[in-house]
Amino acid sequence: MKIALITDTHFGARNDNLAFNDYFYKFWEEEFFPYIDKHDIKTVIHLGDVMDRRKYVSYKIAKDFRERFIKPLVDRKLDVHMMVGNHDTYYKNTNEVNSLYELLGGPGEEKYPNIKCYDGPCTEEFDGVGIHFMPWINAENYERAMRSIQSTYAQICMGHLELNGFEMHAGHFCEGGYPKEMFNKFDTVMSGHFHKKSDDGHIYYLGNTYQMTWSDYKETKGFHIFDTDTRELEYILNPHTIFDKVYYDDTTTDYSDFDVLTLRDKFVKIVVVNKKDFYKFDRFIDRVLSESGAHEVKIVEDFSELDASNVDDAIVENAEDTMTLLERYIDELDVDLDKKRLTGMMKSLYVEASDLEL
Image (tube, rainbow, N blue to C red; front, top):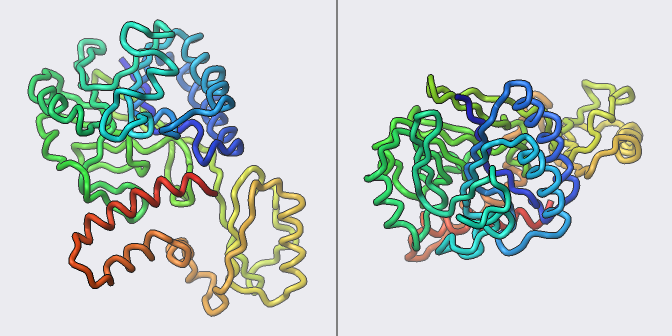
């Protein structure tokens, strides 16, 4: 049996931005549903953070979610299982109030017979293979979650977990979560929550399905197929991107014939490495702004002392990386505080705040 695994879909992300909304559904309509049709996939498991906003869902996002995501699942009569993630919960200390139950119905009140939602740990069986579901762990369900780990017969765990030592997004590792050793009982653990795809050979963070922030630039995105017979994961790449960068250096490149249409429907950063001919630069920018169809264009300058070959993504990101500045500031504070914990709190706040602006 093959199961499609998806996670961290974050419908309504970036403050209900419709450009991102259309980009998300391009993946579902052009990649995901055609793939499961072609390969006769009948089961889908969502590992949490279905929706993005914890407090509310807008009418537009709810309408598209129902018509463009839920309806295709229902029409295909797929066996769908969705776990509550931290973005799906109204409160931080309990999963009791969550978007999945309100939109799709809770136990015994399911609005769709083929879609089942979970706000707490349980074990389900797929083709004779037990899989232990572990939705978002919080203060209210922690003890129940720990007991469920000890009592389940399942050798596989899937959840929305925050475990120490794994990369949350490029260059930033979790330090304020749970120890990964608490899941040693299982042969394999698969999780949502962290958007960067990574693993240690035992625990697999699957990564989200599409780009959502600039930290996702050049990051691999997609979904997985889990084979219950071989217990292997197959990665299916999402070819669509929404972020792009152009490194402008007119000492090495003639931009008069640059195909600006490659930037259509994208958020673009033009990184100026060398700008010797101001007239040609202005002409290039005018073409990008008027002809490309890009959602947004930002110009990053002050790299004139560097060669194009030396200006890599890390240099650009470090020049703009708010989180790096926060870490440095906290590290240099002369205060008697737990700086590691303070840094973790600031990272969490920054990630939440980043959804409010582009």
